Length: 108
Image (tube, rainbow, N blue to C red; front, side, top):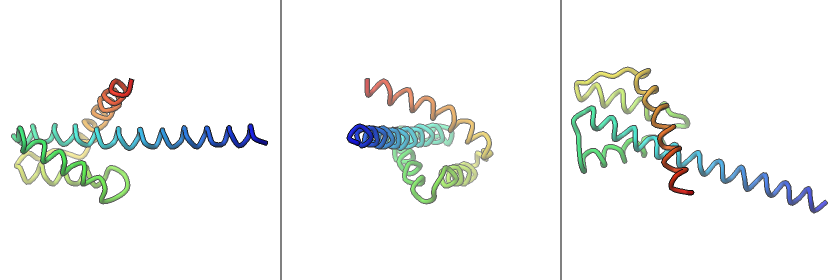
């Protein structure tokens, strides 16, 4: 009976660790996405960092990525640089891979 209990605890710990990693990857990706968008809108330095933080925080409004995508589409349009949702999602996918690589090298 204890081996089943130990195995169950092991699976729970792995699941917890995987969820934590996914959260970190998503937050890092959103920061990178915000920095990319800031650069596209002509922001740099502290302004770019502040904007990236806004993008990270926007992700907590609704489940999924739609809140971040909506913010970026709206902000690009307001900056006079209309960018479609598809282009932003493609960049998001590229940056998710980069975020994961960064986190994996930091933890090993």
